[in-house]
Length: 156
Image 1 (cartoon, rainbow, N blue to C red):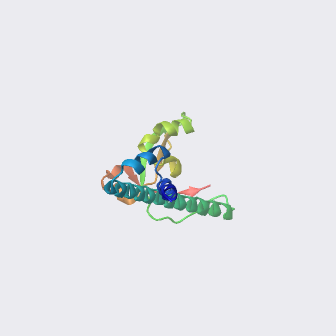
Image 2 (image 1 turned 90 degrees about the vertical axis):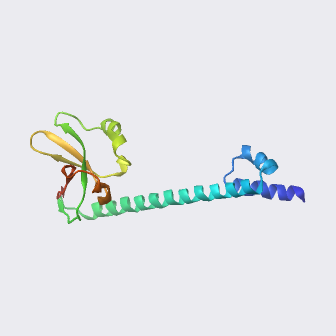
Image 3 (image 1 turned 90 degrees about the horizontal axis):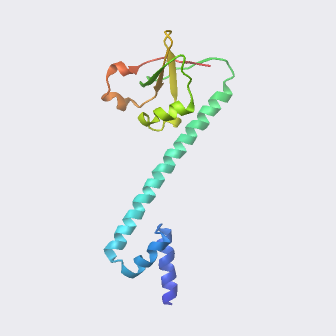
């Protein structure tokens, strides 16, 4: 019967995400407090994973919604009403520069989740192209107003 309890204990520890290498130590030397800490750690890890999955679900829903909108509108150009959008200036480049994934990746350190963000570009007529990313309004409470632009976009 002891082996059945030991197996149940091992399976419980595996279910909690305890690595196989650590199970022997858990079974032979953990106190009740250490098991409590292990359970609390496991719960924090699960909650973090739930949050990550919810964020992923939200992102996938947003991509699906954008795809449906893109497919359903066959016009060459669309005029869309949008709420105020805060666009921090991300980088500027001359018209002779070529925008590439490598260039974006090199600049990505300053923009979290860059490849999940919308990137807007504006050519000012002088050959300078400025790239902007969308940010939440709360981000701009500490930024200087000259870095925030309100624009209306025509999307091809």
